[in-house]
Image (cartoon, rainbow, N blue to C red; front, side, top):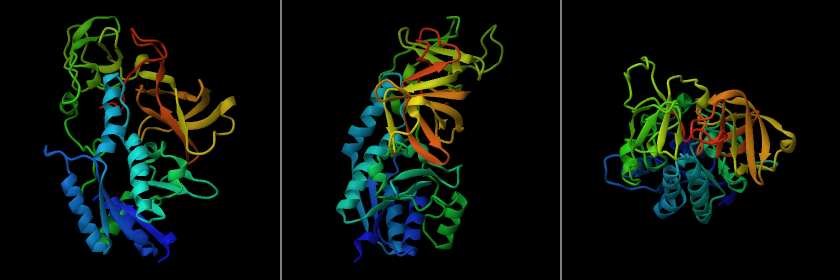
Length: 381
């Protein structure tokens, strides 16, 4: 057996990883499957059991061995605990990014190597170039590109990773699965928090963090209502505020502009492009680079940046910040940037890396917060 052609595919139970395994098998690779379970709760939302069943059906159809591993303890320690700690601190990290770095391309990759594989393959929409050194590239289908979630994966890990779907569109993947008769060709894509799934987020968060009600204020300090706790709200959010129809405020919707932790106050505005909601720059205390430190960073490096998955790629200037950090200045203002999100940088279609945002400089400071630390959460709902 040629071990250099042995690949283990992370079979999630979804169509993407199934087609990844099929394509590698057709290319002559010695393929095995590896299914990972990190979260198991009998609450009606967790699909771990169905996912494993679906992965088994795919493995049976392809005639490959399916291994199964549980990393629940590691997931709690390296991903979920940090997720809760940051929410409690008024930030909102992206757990998919942490899960990819520590679990999928950390513990799972290590396990695949112990099983004798040369590579771990997944169904991510991205591309990886191995020579002369590992590089992460955007998928050809930019509407499905997942490099935002992968930017923190270590270069050493990428040297042992394959992304067979990087040149395909989602519709092509579905067609390949249907033509091959794969049992999950029409299965819905997974959504929600990495491995936790899609569920009412506010109720889920309330199981782990105490509610801390406080005032909802407009920029002048007028109280408009009450919130259940700052952790439950995100920058740019307009749903669930419960402050519509206020006398003298017009009918325009309200948006979360930031959080004043000193007063436990949620600051809201009535303009989706209000200066309190629009950032000119962000800063990260620590940056992760997939390759060597980019040339020209010390002088200011032109690049493109995005602050959320599928967010617009904005022309930017990247500069060093503090000892190991990063400052990104946007050439055009960016809406609803906030601490806890990640800013990810690109040169052409190469993903350079990025960092978790610690400070946001908005066009107008949010009342009660430092001028360079406005906003406080992730994607608007």
